[in-house]
Length: 477
Ligand SMILES: Cc1cc2nc3c(=O)[nH]c(=O)nc-3n(C[C@H](O)[C@H](O)[C@H](O)COP(=O)(O)OP(=O)(O)OC[C@H]3O[C@@H](n4cnc5c(N)ncnc54)[C@H](O)[C@@H]3O)c2cc1C
Figure (cartoon, rainbow, N blue to C red):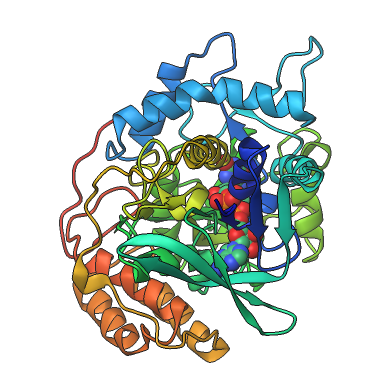
């Protein structure tokens, strides 16, 4: 049996490789290990019901409500129930989570959470966790790490995975790796939007790889806009973590508060967008937070790089593409609709996030899905549950897909303009028509087209998908 091939070295890919051991695997990743991974950029932390006043059922309910009641209850219950053990296991593996004087996890409050629930390592939780996992994986004899290697296409025979074509980024040569088991851990789609908090290399390449071979995707139009990206002309945009609002920072439009800052992100982002489109200047005011620079050192540094002091300055913000709730459709074992193909982390669509991700639920999802894929790939004997594949109209084979910066720029502008916080049929049709001719030759355009097409096909607003040409579905907490 050939080794499992894992594509991507963020937290989801690393967890998969770790949990697979001693089963051999090849971990391929476009840059250096952890390079280009959003996991390294996560500030807040991992949500888990660890507090004395908390329970997984409360975490589940907050997740469901934040997701506009569109999430899958069974998935939500399963993943939130696993969360406390995920945090304890990460701590056991060496992640130095912040602790209270009595030694308990120090739990932060974030928007949409009814309890202090986010285990964190300062405000650089993602980098801390991911580095610990990368160190462990790099030392495993069962893992062959191939850096600067990009998966460019998946090979199938009779509808089953038979291999993956990998391009060496240093030589340009493409090599075929035969395998009957591939785990996609390629991250999100933020880089397809002109305003994003994601690494600009996060262009949904796993979605393209899977969709081109007919794997089912769902809810690609459900993308989350973070309400407080620092608006200083940087690309990608520095993030002002939600935990700042949890600690007391307030949003001001022309000097006045206009929203409850701790509501779920879709609501706060829409409120910020409304103020901006009405011509007001929106800022985050963190000046009242005691010891703000000590408590938020990463944000302090990010702001300082743009000449701002979070302790004394008002911080200009705007919504920016942050997270993809949709993706490659998976079951509880992280299996896609294609035999031999698993998807984990942000590129997957598990049903956890519904129509709007609850803050700090995605690192959690990366770990839980990585563990599930590893167990399933380890036990793989060729059998696979029969699952509905993609809508055939959405499957476009690649005819020499190229990474063309000019095409990527056009995709980013198109999605930002027509598929942003507010959408309507006319704009979405324009986006679909503009991107359609490029879908065979550009993975970025293909995924952009899938996103716009999905948004066009969903005329009703739900969560982060806000159609101005249809009434918003009434959702109450
Ligand atoms: C600024 C920021 C702050 C965040 N804060 C939080 C937070 O506090 N809590 C939380 O839960 N979530 C947070 N998130 C979201 C969270 O970080 C991501 O959802 C999560 O890390 C995704 O992990 P992943 O392993 O799926 O993908 P990633 O970490 O993005 O890793 C993807 C990997 O795949 C590689 N790759 C992609 N395509 C290919 C290819 N074709 N071939 C080879 N390699 C490829 C990339 O190079 C990268 O190594 C934040 C996100 C951002 C951007």
